[in-house]
Image (cartoon, rainbow, N blue to C red; front, side, top):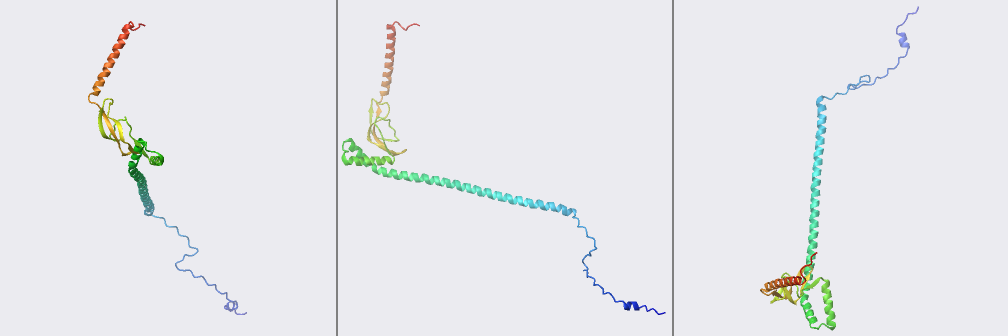
Length: 239
């Protein structure tokens, strides 16, 4: 019998090399570790979250109100500026028209003596030949510029457009009347640049009473004549 050598088999069989084990960090969880549950928020955190959202919404609303207020202010400023500009344009246009009318009035006022000379020459029959053509052209031109002549005999006296140079009494007038035009008046539109210089006549003192008495007497005479006719005809006819 052979004596067994207990270490023989181990020496005869080759040893298997050992696989190196991966190092696991001390703080890392192993693959077999169970996943931890998510932390549950506390009641204070749940109450604080809606409060934060409400504060943020309030800030946005306040900012929006500020923007709206600023927009309304700017809109009001623009409207005010537009109204001021429209008033300025109307004022400038009104001033421009007034300056134009004043310039035209000043020019025509300087020509009034020439027009008076033309009128006197026409009355005396001296407006003939080339002088007549020039005079008519001048009168046409000033008429186109808006000059209007006024003042006629027999019209009632108006102190706003008439200037009385002579005064008298007349039995055939019932009110102060222009009986003679010494110098015609001129106007541009509604603006009088020279009043008409006239001679006026007023009713004679007591003339109104005499005329009233005459009218009453005439009425009485007419009534008496009608009654006489009725008597001659045998009175009014009976139906």
